[in-house]
Amino acid sequence: MVLPKGLPPKNSTGLVDYIRKSEHVPILVGVRAERDRLIRVLKIAVEHDNRIRSIHHAMVYHTGVQATVELHIVMDESLSLKITHDISHSLQEKLLKLDFVERAFVHCDYDCDE
Figure: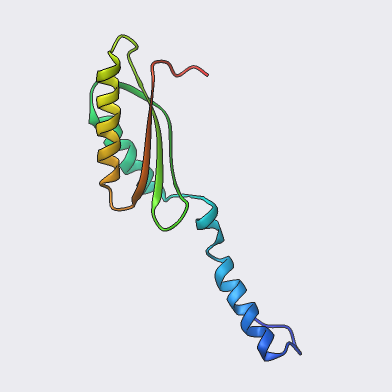
């Protein structure tokens, strides 16, 4: 980067610090994770339990160094609350074991119409 002519040296340090820090702003406020990470999450979710009929919503994003995962899975409404809870909770625990995941939220739906 070329600094403006006549800028005093003491100010240039502040400008360089600002530029360096501003490069990290997107990852702090939230930015989509790499595609391969989303694919890994989806593969785990699809293979987790055959009672998961579909995935309604999936997001993997950074709000820091590690990623947050949000999944909405669809299961049959006739399944008991205990079964749906156990499936979604065990999926959440599995996602938290991924080396890039800090938080994981798994929400269970019985219908994907919105």
